[in-house]
Length: 346
Image (cartoon, rainbow, N blue to C red; front, top):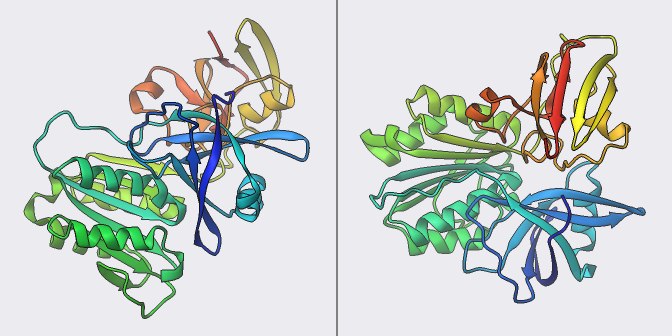
């Protein structure tokens, strides 16, 4: 992906000690997006241009905005958190993502939003859209270590007061036993499946199974919440995850070969044990598109033509797309020497 926009900084908001929100000035250019989508930010660091996806926390009618949280070893996130006020211009690509589905019918329903950490960024966008543009009842469950880690705290409090008739929020603090005025309900414990079941049944009543669920955060929370909602009979659940686990160890321990078609050129990739197809393509200087490298953005999707790959994580492709042969190269590990894949314009 190449940058599409050059935006200016409109304002910088220091949300927490390790998190910053950048509000952009689009210089009058039209920019349209739906809740929960993300953009790519490009920065030149150490004479190399790198890009990372960041979810928009804004909705239509607002200036585009993203929230960046410091990540251990994260070159871009650390640079932005440390230097946001000194960055005047931003090269931006996108936007992309299919996390949120805009409902066609106008009948009010219920929405369950579960977020943690920087996973609250797309969740906050969906929350604002649901409250401002629908009549849906919304339940928000926000998990953090302490109250000081809560993103958008003042805005959440304002929404609690403004939509008290159909917005219920729960803050779950795993490392805090008391808190100040934050609005909504507070639980002092690590979030568990039992907490989720009690909250959902108490707030939404007998028709909770008809709810739509959106979950975003670290892998453990996403899997916990998704399994819990599934066990409760809530089938319409969307997930987004920022960091995925490493592949299973039961893969070839010897190098494998992958026949890789990119645009109008065919390459033979030597893939080392534990190496993804994407990393092998990058090592061969093939200009494939990629960004997150964690199975969440979908930029590196390619078609599996033959052979078998193990896809360690997938939070970008639908089940129909996987059935049609699409795979995420960053999460694809060859299971044999018969793998053939195609990306680009093919």
